Amino acid sequence: MRDLLFGAFQQIVHPAPPHLAPTIVETYFNYFTEIEEHFQRRRGTLLLMSPLDWALMETWKDAGIPLEAVLRGIDATFDKWERRPRKTRKVNGLAFCAQEVLAAVEELKEAAVGAAPKQPRDTGLEQSLVAGFLERNAEQLDQLQLPATAQTLARETAANLRSLAESLSQTAPMQMEDLERRLTIAEEKLFAALLAATPDEALFQVRSDADRDLAPYRRKMTAPQIEQLQKQYVHKRLLEQYHVPRLSLFYM
Image 1: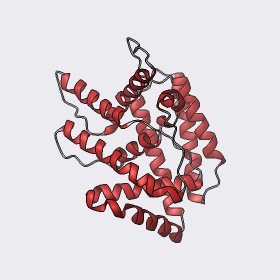
Image 2 (image 1 turned 135 degrees about the horizontal axis):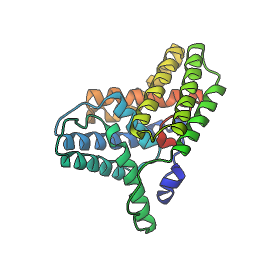
Image 3 (image 1 turned 120 degrees about the vertical axis):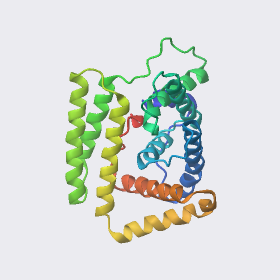
C-alpha cells in the first residue's frame, strides 16, 4: 500500500538507526508543528493535541505522507464540517481527518504522474486488503520474544487483530477512522508494556539521547510539544528495539 501511494514521490521511509536520531528530531519538528498549528487555526481554538494526535502525526511522518497532503486533508475535513447544516459534533482530533488525508495523498500522486483524478472518487480501503494486513501483524506479534508482561499483551493484541480481520470479512463496511483509532490504542498499550518492562538503565540511555537531540529545538517549542516529542522518540526506539510491527493502516 505504501509503495502504491507514495511511489511517485520516492519517499519510502526506512527506520533510522540510533546514530541518525538527530535527523529524526530535526525533520519531525517542522512536520509536527506545521500540522498542529494548521489544525488549531482551522478549529479556531488552541486545543492541545492529544497523545493520539501525536501518535497519528508520527505515523504519517514515518509512512512518508507529505506535509502538503496532511494540510489538504485537514482543510477538506473542516470544509465539509462547515457545510453541514447542523454542527453538533466538532472536529476534536486529527483522527477525524484521516480519510481525507488519504484522499489528498492519492490526489498528489495522480498529479505527480499526470493522471486525471477518477470521478467519483472512492477514498476507502479494500476491506480484504486491510484484513490481510491485520492478519500479518497478528502473525508477527505471535512470533515475538518479549518480556513476560509485554508478551502476554502481544498475544492478546494478536487475537484482537484476528478478530477485527474476521469482522472485516463478515460484516458491512467498517469505518476506517474507527479501526485506525483502535489500532493506535493497541500500539500505545504495547508501548506502555514495553516501557514498563525495559530496564531502567536502557531507558535512561534512550531518554538521554532524546534530551541531547532535542536541545537545539527547546527554545522553539512549548512544554507540551517537548513532552510529546520526547515520548515519540522513546516510542520509536523501543518499538524498533523489540521488532514490534507498526499497527496503523498507513503502514500497509
